[in-house]
Length: 137
Image (cartoon, rainbow, N blue to C red):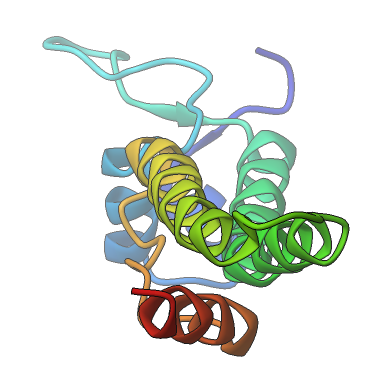
């Protein structure tokens, strides 16, 4: 617990308001020791651990924003490599697979961080696969 600071001092070291640090703690930021009742039982904050937690969170947000496009590219590549009479039907299977995989990964990340956004835009390659499938039948 060496280097752990009381919440007001930790907030100052992080250059944020104490209320912001309390919200971060509620959202899962690490603490060196949780406060309790009685004298000397205050919450102590490990500032470097909180900074690392914030960095991981930012990384998760970036990764979450890349997931739909990365999986769409994989689905499109799989479609391009497909041959045979069922190619248009396979486009539909790939759209369904993309949808399930994308929402599953985003939901998993959202369990760790509620600020991970829901899927907002369908990538252009998935829309193309959807159009190919719809024209087939």
